Structure formats: C-alpha cells, structure tokens
Amino acid sequence: MNVLLIGSGGREHAIAWKLRQSKDLGQLYTAPGNPGTARCGKNIPIDVNDTQALVDFARQRDIGLVVIGPEDPLAGGIVDAFEAAGIKAFGPNQAAAQLEADKAFAKQIMRANSVPTAESRTFDTFEDAKAYIASRDEAVVIKAVGLAKGKGVFVCNDPSDGILAAEKIMCDRIFGEAGAQILVEDKLLGQEASILAFVDGRSIYVMEPSQDHKPVGDGDTGANTGGMGAYCPAPIVTDKLMDHIIKEILVPTVDGMNRNGTPYKGVLYAGLMMTQGGPRVLEYNVRFGDPETQPILIRLQGDLLEILLAVCDGRLDEVDLSWDEKAAVCVVMASGGYPDAYEKGKVISGIDKAEAIEGVTVFHAGTSEKEGRLVTSGGRVLGVTGVGATITDAKAKAYEGVEKISFEGATYRRDIADKAL
Ligand code: AMP
Ligand code: GLY
Image 1 (cartoon, protein in one colour):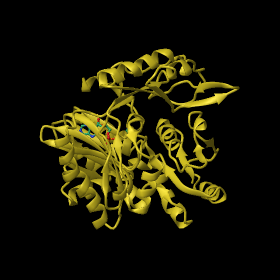
Image 2 (cartoon, helix red, strand yellow):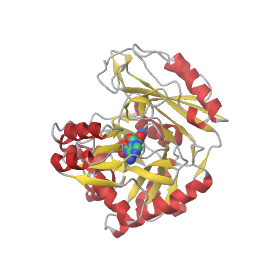
Image 3 (cartoon, protein in one colour):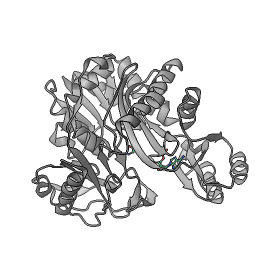
Image 4 (spheres, helix red, strand yellow):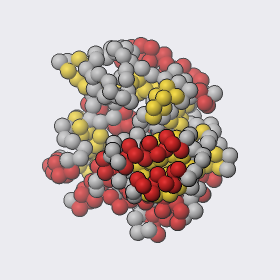
C-alpha cells in the first residue's frame, strides 16, 4: 500500500522510519519531509496546508493511507477533505481536532464529562480578563485559546504578569486570531507526563507513557519550546496510575466526544500534570507529540501501518501491540538562540558517527540539504535517541551520540530524563 505522510519534523521522521518496517508498505511519500524522511521514502515538495494539492497528489499516486503529523492541517479540516475524496486518512476530522485547536472547546468537553483539569475561565475581552486577573492574588496561567505552536501558554507567578500576558495575547495579538479569546487557569504543581493513545472512535489503545522537557534550559529554566527531549517509559506513571488515567481521563474524553457528536479517531494525546490530588489534564493534542514520538515509536513492536489502518477502519480491538522492554531517551539538538531568533544554514557533521554507535538513532527535524551538504534549517535540528536496558543506559547512549555531532551554535539540555533517575 502506498502511504502519504504529511509534515517535516522529528515526529515525521520517526513515523516514516517505523512505517518503513511495515510489511505491506509500498511507496512512502512525505510532504514536504526532510532529509531524514528522504531516507525512508520520497519527499514531495507540497506544503502541509495545501490541501487541494495533497488530495490531487494522493489521487494520482494511488495512496491507500494518508498520515497527518502536525496539528495545523488537522485543524484546517484536511481529514475531511481526504475522506470526501474517498481516501483513508489517519487523524481526527476538523470537528474533533477542536480538542487541540480550541482550548475553550476542550475545557467544555472536560467539564461536561468530569475529566480532572485546572479550574479556568474564558474571556473574550481584555477588560474583563484584566479585572478578573487583578482580583486574584495567586499564580495564574494565561492561555491563548487557539493554536500557537506550543508557545501560547504563560505561567505567571504574579497576577500582574498575567495581565501583561493577557495584553500581549489579546491586544497586541502576538499569536494573531488564536488570541481572540484567552483562558485564565489555576496553576497546577507536579511533574508532567504525556499519555498518547490510539483511538478509533470507540476503542482506546494506550501507548507507553513518556515525559517531555518543554523549557529550553537545564532544570526546567527559560522559555517554553516545542520540547527539548523526551524519554519513554516514564516511571512516574505506574501501572496503577495508568489504569486511573484510562478510566478517569481517556475513556470519559472519548465517550464525551461521541456524546458531543464529534467522535474522535487518531492519536489522542493528553498532557497531564501529576498533582497531589491526582493527574489533571493540562491540554489535549490531536496528534503524535514531538519529540515524544521518537522515543515511543522506537520501542513500539508491531506493524505501525496495520495499527493506523485499524484506527481508520474502527477495528483497533483486532490489533496486537507490544513494547520493547528497553528504555529510550531522545535529546533534541537545537540551533543557538532557539526558541527565539536563530541562524540557519550551519553545516552539520557527525551523524554517521553517532549512528555507528549501537542503540543510537538520529531523527532529523530542522535540517535541509544545500549544495550536497546537510545544514540546519529550523530551531529543533535533530533528535538523538538512545536505547538501553535502563533509562540510565539509554540516556548515556543518547548523549554519546550527541557528542559525535556538531554544528555551529548547537545547544541541548544536559539533563534529559534526570527526573526518572
Ligand atoms: P500546554 O501547551 O497547555 O501544554 O502548556 C504548555 C506548558 O505550560 C505545559 O507543558 C506546562 O508546563 C505549562 N502549563 C500549562 N497549563 C498549566 C497549569 N494549569 N499549571 C501549571 N503549568 C501549566
Ligand atoms: N511535545 C509537545 C507537543 O508535541 O505538543
């Protein structure tokens, strides 16, 4: 079967790498892809949001399944467009993608179905938001309601900073229309965990738990990023806790989406805070997480293409998934300056040496090919993933790999996975 994968990050390279191992895979096309996905199939220069061109391409190339990586096209209704054209697409339709694209919608679903989350209020004018924030004397979290590339959340220990954040989002519109409304939320304390599950509208298959590292600096300091590294499994999520998460969070969410008339299919990603009062939802994502997908898929045993098709066909209960016992740790190497401004076009060397180490796999994110050389082209450049018997071993492998790779200005966190040790 020919597959079209949409996206160009580390997540997509990991998906392409895993799909390549599927026994029924024919041609794999990635639009637009990166030099990593080019090693697993053929890259096609079509933008992820150019729905019509993607549908036309899929028709011409006899594509049996389309896999959508990033949230933007999902929120834009790309799955609806493929289904209207009679082509199977893995991911939620536009109505269900609101779970990520509209945080006010997500809160409504959580409230209506008693899914534990932070208390919050939604505002559509700055004046009302300001008056409310000013009336509070504890920390607040301000969130743009729409999509903001993971940067739309401000955790403010002082309410006066909360007012400034609300002003930037609502008046200065630093995230454009995504900031037409905001949520003002209570701050939760605890460790975070990413729970990803395959959902076919009815059945839920939970993947192994992982943990992301959002802030750019060691010890969780500095600005939030798309994610500077992740590991899997995350021991903080014990089997008992996972049962609780399935029962109290995933099942009511999936049932609630059905009751709401917006059935969910694809990967449901619950970003959780493990508070003293139990796990609470910080956010939903409607897709594989990045970088979490890199350490997760490297441990997945079983045929990814078969699983994705089963999700599309509503027969997830028929597939068998299992996991490599080993642990995986992914360290993101980023461009100097990220998540603020950074330079591109720096020559990357040493990937082959890193990959020569047993247990090390390098996934490309922000790389491109220029005059026959591999150069940086994004904030997050590479995900170096190490696999080992324990998290300690996997971490050592990942950093052994990182040390072999160089490009000017390369930065990375030194403490990925330390919370698990
Ligand atoms: P989100 O994009 O909603 O996951 O938020 C990005 C990051 O902001 C999360 O990974 C958390 O670190 C933090 N965050 C979001 N909501 C809260 C909250 N209610 N309390 C504390 N931290 C939060
Ligand atoms: N790593 C967080 C995300 O994919 O949104």
